[in-house]
Image (cartoon, rainbow, N blue to C red):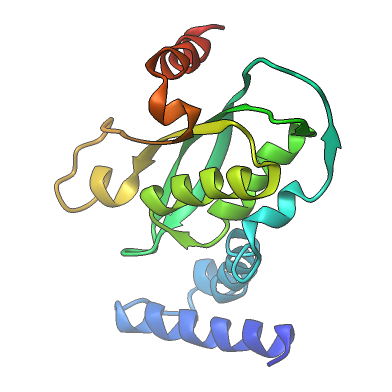
Length: 189
């Protein structure tokens, strides 16, 4: 199915949803809403069907023995259970094993993992697995913080609540001091 046909179908379905909730889709403020929502869906779900590992395809040989931490990577995604946003920051730490990747690639990795209907636990796992599979480091630790509008704005309505998910692989699982070093790095400004 062509992208244009998918866009037209999305517009039709968005218009139908608006009508089903009782809105007048001929009202001036809603005339172009189906078109805008279809365009937005194309943007916020552009990672569907793309393996997040593709963000890490260019690696470099480097003999570095310390920890690399990339923190405060902003993301926006949609809860797959309610199709409303959740957002926050991802933090990635790893200990290279002879291979590194350009630091911006971690932001691209998080973006690819988040550009699909998602749950925070899976997104955290996908980021950690991608780093392990592509770079094969001594270890990786990924921590993702998120504010979920499905919890803050509906249902139990607990604004300000946040969720933290963390995955440790390799040496981070066995070495508590390394995990603590990662946590200290997150506290630095």
